[in-house]
Each structure stands twice: as structure tokens, then as C-alpha cells.
Length: 265
Image 1 (cartoon, rainbow, N blue to C red):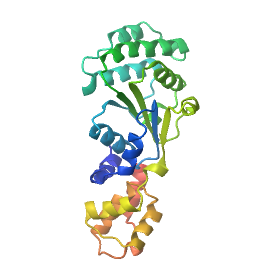
Image 2: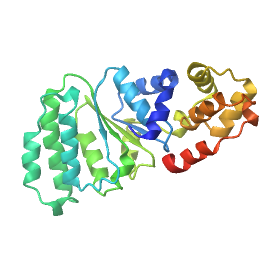
Image 3: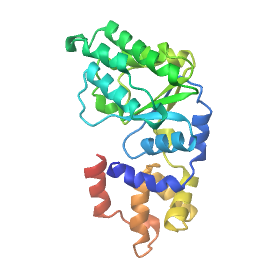
Image 4: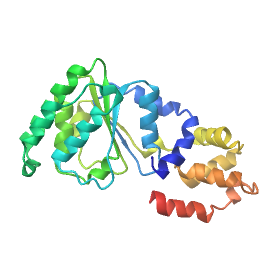
């Protein structure tokens, strides 16, 4: 868990009913995307929803500066699945044997991607008794590899109705999913969905910091932070320990600005 997560997760006491309802209403979609800048609670929403809903799932967290070629990405993928509590018994032996016989220079070949996906699914699907959600968190760290679009496309096209895909990214995905959208198999969440609304800001202030804000102060914070989940707790934490000047008169401290610069950006 990084520093952004540690701040954002303070809001987990706030039940974001409207977001959960949106996700629940689109669970039948083949792909769900969550795209927003750092600090808008993507990873928190992903973890909370999948765990609290008790859906069988695996969250594949992409490491920063991973520089995967296709084969190394697939190895990381199947190893992550094998270590998932919902994938007990999956060893992907056939996939590992196939990858061992492939050449690194083949990483951009469609046939390699298709064969790898088909073998993975042949080992994975017989083990699944219900819907399974494969979530890739921090897709932006994959550095826009040329093979990613084909992998996503074939993984979704070849898998049965039980396997769903969730993609979370700080930046726009490096490929379009227009084909899935046209077939109504895609649901997308963006910054406009994730940012806190006035009710959630009020719940955060009262529930976590025991601060009662006026309508004027709520509107000021909403305008000031534009629903940014990381910025709001930082401000309220500082405000709570201040001399309780009015929110609209209270200045953000150097500490908050340093956090914005060093941790988030």
C-alpha cells in the first residue's frame, strides 16, 4: 500500500453507496474500466467492492516501471493468479511449458498472444464454479506495450461468460474498447463518478473527523478540491487541529502542498 492509499483508505468508513450501485448494476459486463488521476480512490473502491461483495476475484497489481515484454507479463499474471485465494489449485503447468518454448522476439506476434490466452483459459475456466473477476490495478505502469490491446481483446473474446475483466488506471487506457462498447459489454467509471459529492464530504467530515460543516463550507470544499478524495482528508485533518477558523478562511498548510507535490504528483 502506498502513501496515497493510506490517506484514501481513511474514507472507507464512508459507504459510497452510489458507486457500489453503479458497479453492481454492471457486473454482467465483460469489461469494467476505472480511470482517474492519483488520489481518487480507484484501488480502494476496487478492493472494497470485490471483498465486500464476496465475488471470486484476483487483483493483479502492476508494479511501477515493470517494463514487461509479453512473456514476462504472462508469467507475472499466472503467478499472481496462482497465489490468489480464489484460485486455489491453479498451477498453469501447460502455460509455463508453452512460454518456456517461445522466443522473446515473438512478443509482438498475434499468434503467440492468441495461443497464450487460449492455454491460460483452458487451465483456468474448468476450475471456476461461478463468476470470476480478474482486476488489473495500475495499468498505466505497463508503459503502453503494443501487445496489451491484443491481450485484452483476446482474453475477453475467448473467455466464457463467467470471466470478467476490470482495468484500473491513472491515465487514459492506451487502446480503445469501442468494439466492446458497441456490444454493450463495457462499463466505464471516470473522475466524474469517483470524486466525492457534497453528501460524501459531509459524511467524511462528521464520521471521521467529527467536524460539522455549514452548507457554505461544504460548497467551498467541494469547489476547492473538486471532490478529490486524497485532498479532502488532508485538509480536514489539518483543519481539525487548527484554531477552527472558518473553512473558507482557512489556508492549506505547507505540509499539504508538499504532500501534493511529492507523493501524488
